[in-house]
Structures are given as C-alpha cells and as structure tokens.
Image 1 (cartoon, rainbow, N blue to C red):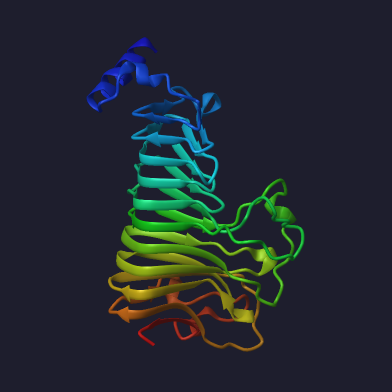
Image 2 (cartoon, rainbow, N blue to C red):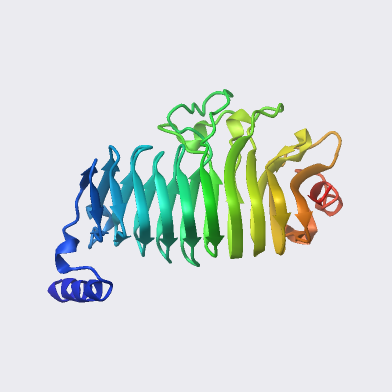
Length: 308
C-alpha cells in the first residue's frame, strides 16, 4: 500500500499537483478551490465525495479511483475537470465547463445540468443524461414526467452516452404499462455534436409514453444512435438536427414489440441540411414488431429525412 500511494503521489506531481492536494476539500460551499485530486484510493466502498454548493467553484480538478465530485446547485460549477478511471462527476443543476471523461470515468448530468465549452467522452468513457426530473417521477402511474432539461454546448463522443429516465425508490419492475397515446417529449439539447465512433443510446420513459426529442444544432462524424419506438402506435424517439448533418451514422431501433394493426412510416431523424447518411443496424435491416415478420419492416417504416 505504501508503494502504491508513493507511486500515485509521484505521478500526481508530474501532472502539476502536489502531494498535499490529495487531501482535497470535501465541502466546497461558496468558495473556490483549484488543482485538487479527488480520489477514494482503494475501493467503491470507500468513495470520497467533494460536494460543491452555494456558488462554489472547483478549477482544474481530477477525479479518479472511486472519488466523486458533485455539483449540487445552479450557482455552482466545475471548470476544466478531468474524470479518470473509476472517477465520477455528477452535475445537479450546475455547470460543467470544459470536461474530459477518460476511459473508465463517468459523468452524470441530472435535472437542469449544463455543459459549456468542450465536453469530451473518450473511448471507454461513459456519460448518463437524465431526461426526467427524478424528484417527481412516479413510475407506477401513467402520469407524464417533467423533462430533465439538460443542455450541452459542444460534445465529442468516442465512448458511450445514454439518455434515459431517472427516478427514486421504485424498481423497474413496478413500471406502469406503456399507454397507446403518446405523451409530451423529453427534450435534451446539444449545440454541436461530433461522433468519433461513439454511441448515443436514447431510452424513452415508458409509463408516460414519452419519447426522447434530441435537439442538435450541428451533427458530424461517424457513429451510432440507439432509439426506442412503439411503431404500433406510431411513437418513438426523434432526433432533430436544426442546422447541418454530415457524416455516416447507424441507427439501432429497439421497438416495444407491440403488434400493430396497421403500419405507417415514423420519422425518427430530421436534418434541415447536409449530406449525412443513416443506415439501420438491426439484424436483416429490420425492426421486430412482435409476431409480424421482421423481413417486411425496414427503413420504409423508420425514416431519416435530410433537407425536407
């Protein structure tokens, strides 16, 4: 253990951090701290948390090894944060400005979380975006959930990003059945999105029949999207590119499997301009609609529109 700690301290010194910085400030309330390493050092059961609230600011911090930084209100922020292996950064309402999530690191953006500057999710890094207000969700009813309202300025994704509902207390087994009438969309906004062989997975809120609406201004690169649909009721996630889409993208459609009485096209992607191409990733280029043969359900029912 002594050798491990010594090696960690030596490594930290090369990154511009002192050995003293390992004793990080746990309660950053209304103050500014800089150049700290937030780490649990040993295991998930010994996680150390740096809470930032009351207008607190953390600058140039690194979180790793079961450490956690939590931005806990709208007046607080994290600037120039690096999230390394087994590190966790959580944004509740506040702002993450210039963030790098490396392999094995995780970023969670909850209700009204915002990202400004750059946000890089490298290969092996993960990000979770809440599309619901977790405080008010009752998964046992069909009441619509309020949206999470997460917004991101510039994001580069080589890892995996999941946009999904979050809630308190009830297990997923208690979910109310998805109704046939579509509810209000759950909106997430990204100004500029670059995929670098990354994957973005959209998961709808089933009890409220609430699909995602991913609002992107500009999309480029190459990578894949996953969406959820219930084609039997002509509902599903929707990706809207307001300006320009360029590059090559795959689309994995996860349908509820409810058997449709009729089939009609469902537009799931629309871009106002650009030359982007989208292809279906499902086996045999088909979406499984319960007992209906998958061979007849293809991109004719799940459409991408460019400049229409």
